[in-house]
Length: 257
Image 1 (cartoon, one colour):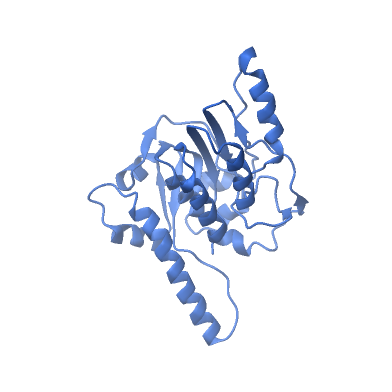
Image 2: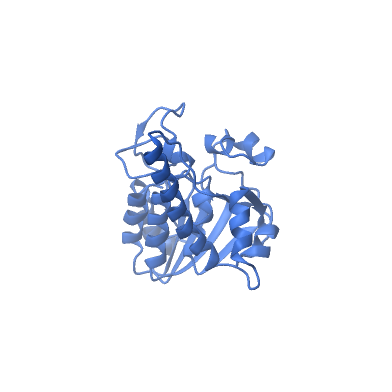
């Protein structure tokens, strides 16, 4: 369970799920999906309108299930490991050719979800962060030992995903050590270990989140950005013959991430 799982006292007001654009550039063959927020478990309430629930992704995928191509844009500090794994598996099952783009930050579970895609792209100035799953726990000695065993099992699942996406010649034990140390990798560094393609640097701030302050080694620049709201990029201009598709796409705002 990652940090957001235990963020029960965040200094934010709960709000019902409100409209936020999630699918863009919808055509007969492709769509763009944005995951720009913390990964949280399914609930009737969200701490922030940008929070991403598995049900959000499921609802969106129902709308784009028959498309040939799906572009997934990620800017997330992570969150609930179980919600993240559910999202990963749903995206993995989708039959479209998937390209994932780590726009600003793919941290914690936000570093796992991109690997559900067939191709992963990361700008040279974006970040991928991997670490061991962790949780706040209370109880007697038996309870705490059980939690530790559960965390080991969870980590095994995450390591398997990373292992399936390693560069040739990279030892998974290296990745395990990097997870133990909470490792932040910019795009160029990430490409040394994982099968990702480095693309031109983009001016996209890391996702706004107090989670960034809870990690041990968050780059100072990201912490300084953490209170700046980051929304998915504006849609490009569409030709008149695509108007109806775009109108339908905009109606998908209620399917939120």
